[in-house]
Image (tube, rainbow over all chains, first blue to last red; front, side, top):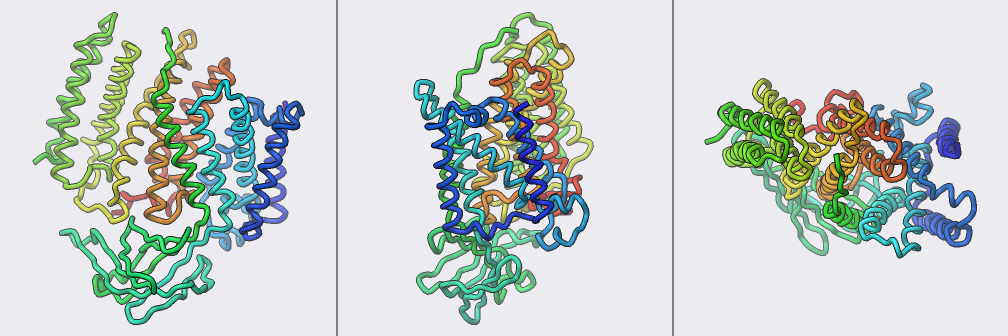
Length: 290
Length: 261
């Protein structure tokens, strides 16, 4: 019965979504996200250490909560998987019930974020319990759960700090004007200029490889698909496009600049989870008689 | 020069050998070494074709649907053989042979587009581990799916402990495949995860199996639900693998390498 509260919590998130629209992600930029994350973690530690016998703590740690949180995450992910996801402006222009519930731009909707928050909280509490009961400490439990928690933490709390910019880089002159996804211009702290461009082709004329050599004030570097360049801390440059008609004579190339300062947290989580998966592979299979 | 044109001459011996293995294992009370040997030979023949195709294409055969089906046939036989050696079910080789043969036949009747080019985004050291690890997990989880179906029908026998072991192995490879994919996505597109339809369905499948493991640990009596979950998660896996091409929500997926090319 208690698990009904979990579903009530999601219904509440849907109501909030219907009344005020998608979550205001821009409010959660640094240092707001770090501050709230610190409060949330402190609350979890406090709940676990000081309030371990409270009904709420026991509820968060109960098997039913784990199982139903996973069910909720699946249902929420199904909404993303089944409804076509539109850009924020396209989604806002629709006026159906499903649109008002956020189904067409679900990744930043209240119910989806509420589900991820629930999962992280339950996961965090289980990690705290695993930590406290060192007698039953199992490395694979630790790696898998902490890894997933960190990966989610980096993606969830770092989302507002992540910026994706696009920028044409020309041969003729250096420039620093880049554009946000919605078309707003912005200026980088450094200039970029296209120095050289190469394209190789397959026999059928399809490009097999292309590479751009760019000049930045500090140094010269070559970009290729799958080979980005890390120009600043948390900031990487990717080659995305060029003038296909002109090929190697292309007068410009399009680069994508990704600012993701939290990527190191996510990467650490992914590595731990990878190690956990390997440990699970080497776990002793349970014997079964059939 | 081994190409798709000679596929029939490799598929038929693979089929015959794996059927021989299945029949031998069905007829034997104990683990049959002859069955293992026949299936192993079938695996070797099909591996020979994959290796030859790889050489003649001058790229790993992992791009088109036809190519991934080929790996699925191969890994299904390997996963069946592994399960037989490890747990000795007499019927598992028949099932793995059946599934493997279905995919061989699809490849004979509906060969996909085959060409030499590999677009730049796919030219990465992540390509081979990402796809092979995934296809291997698909085959192991395919075996778990069969156990789930079987157990739902014959409720008296409890095969779920075996399914548990298969799901652990399958989920471990599924996790590796997904994380290799996200590390690769960061390198290619700048984001670890972007909730693209294919990624979303991958996560649905992944959490489905996570749910199975937690359900088995925490609510071991809910066996029917566990069976249903094995089946539904495997359906999710099929949608993620190829069903997505037919979903209206996935028409702009960045992962559709085979569509329209």
